Length: 98
Image (tube, one colour):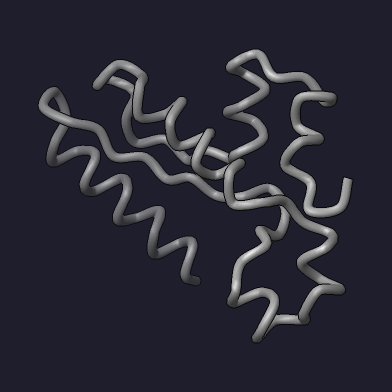
């Protein structure tokens, strides 16, 4: 339900700012190693299977540097980075446990 709600917000806001700005959603493909995951959602057993927060930052940078007409999209971090030219080997740097 939360992602559905966020999706509706993205579509609505993208429509409101069309031509003047952009609104997109960015979601992780895998678990991201955050304090919440480590402390509340399973500890290091879970976070060690995921990726570092830098993958989200790098994917956000790719999206934020696109043309203003790139709006109303639902993006996944790995898909964005692969489209930008990163390979499987390049994505390894984001693994919590290489």
